[in-house]
Image (cartoon, rainbow, N blue to C red; front, side, top):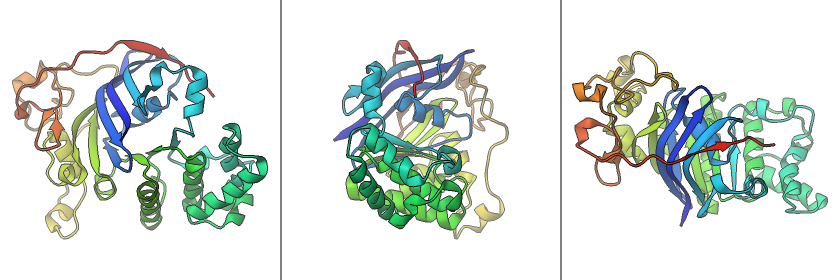
Length: 332
């Protein structure tokens, strides 16, 4: 069953910054989709757009079908009902996401009560169950965020995301500030919860090794566009797009001394979303760019079984039609 289908999604901020451009993605229940790319490539904007959490003034085009219902055309009351209960998000940096003056148990119980899922007594019981589900004693519900370690706070954030039994979880860099041991524990926990409850997971990270080990499929974004998508391990080990290949080469591989002593990488930075170059946005940094790349944009095309990539070296493709843009306002 398809939980989420994104069709030709575009997001433009005031000033003309095209943060997301023509993104197509889909996710089924029990599956895990990784999204990778450098800072400024549109990953977090994409995550925020899925639940209409973008700032005022952002213009959005395309469709975001959650359980077949377009999030972008929902009334605000319906959007509020979908958040937490239909889909929830785990942000990076739990210390900045949790309220420092409220006990973590109260913060986990809050969405349960707001959505009318339980009475106050039942919500407290559910909070203890959720904490134990993520590997914390139920008694930690009385703790304040500053009394918990970084890994414990991130577990609280995951418990909060699960509070209203959503079918989709969006995790935006959930382990960025954690050491490698705690990072592995958190990722293993998320993976177990998704598989055990048949949830859908979108995991956003800079680290392709993490995504290749955790996710079923991997989408690599550059300048607001998905430049390669396919089975996670295949994209990591045998990328077809030059950018995905460079991103993968930047991470040393165990048992490969050559990659450890001379890791790959890419000079320069992604372009300013408000001043994208003509043609393929990647061509100024691309080691195999052709003259046509500077004048013709590139769209995803078949790159093997279950794979697609946006590169001229993979053959011709007809670009998809542009969707209409809409104004989206943030809400609390």
